[in-house]
Each structure stands twice: as C-alpha cells, then as structure tokens.
Image (tube, rainbow, N blue to C red):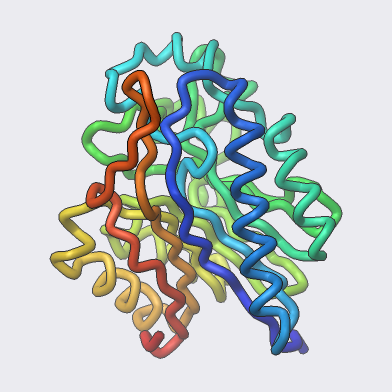
Length: 264
C-alpha cells in the first residue's frame, strides 16, 4: 500500500537562456522554489513527487529567434543524464523525492537531432524514465518519434511503451506528457492502458489558459482515465534585450493538481 504524500506542481518564472552556461543558475532558482514549497507543505505529508514546468531551465529562445536545429543541438541541447540533471538529482536526494522535469535534449541514436524530453529523477538522483514529446506546438523545433518513425520502431518497437512509457515507481505509476500533448485524449488513453495512475502535464500557453481549455483538458484527462493529473505552468517570462525584462501574460499560470474524479 502506498502511504499518503504530497505532490507539488511548482510554478516558476521561465527564463530564456542564451547560453548553456546559464543553466546552473536557473536550476539553482528551481531549487530555491522547491526549498520554499517543501518547507511549507511537508508539515502535513512528506513531499514525494515534484513536477516542474516545461523548459524550466532552458526556456524557449530557439523558438523566438527561429534558431537552426543543428545549431541548437550543438550549443544548447543537454544530455540526459548530464550535468543539469545531476544538479536536479541533488535536490531529489536532499528531499527523498521524485522530480519530474523536461529539457530539449540530444539523443545518442539520432545525431544532430534534439527531442523535447520529459524525465523522472528518483530519490537516489538517477534517471528512471524518459518520454519524448509526440505532439508539438506550431513554433516548436523539436524532433518527435513520428518524424523518425521507421528508425524509432526499428530501435524500440511499435508498441504503446515505445511512445508512451509509464514509470512504475514505489509512489505509483507515472506517465509524463508535455504541453500540447494534453490537447489530445489519445496519449492519456495509451498511458492508462500501460498502467498509469498519475499523469504529469507540464505547461500550456495563452490564449488557452484564460479561455479555459487548460483546465477543461486537465480535468477531462483525469476523469476519463480515473487518474491524477499534476500540471505546473509557467509564471512570468524573463527575457533579455540588453537588460532584464519581465514579460507577463504569455504564460498564463493557473498550475493545478486534479484528482481521479476530475476535481481539484
């Protein structure tokens, strides 16, 4: 039996990094957000699951400037595992918790390609799960498994696990999704068929927050599949044009945790 615990959907400011050297400072900020949340919420139940929004230490600059794909691979994409996930792993060890995050990352089988990748770090700081985003926003440059379908199937097979893996963990079975994947019911049906009990769905932009689609989708995915949905979104966007500038509104917040009845 799984004991009661707290799960955090951490809403943080979203940076727009220009160089990979900025990532450690952004991850330190994520750590401070986690410190504050744990200090408050572990009073009732231990925090065993932490979910960060999409691109929480990289940002989306490649989309804004229409950066060449291979150039991004060489200059900004990370490895999973790698130095960045090691830093997050230290926080997982510190709090004996699982951490769900995302990054635009290289793939050893696909040189000069990057994938928008969700991953889970366990309390020992180890990567125990990866999911490669399948449905993209119109401006997103990431490769998807469908873009390289024949090779993907050759490597991983064509079963649901090849595209929608579920991490079967001591705290429950977790399926990860990223942003625009939540617009469609099919990924969640696939995850539920693979045994998922908890979905993480990280981020969604305006205008679909204020118009209500974000909330409707999250509640529907939970209710349709009798699963929990943990959905952190971004707060203020931080961009630099010769100086630091805060831009609100593009990322609509309203992070939420929905239970298996569609309530939250």
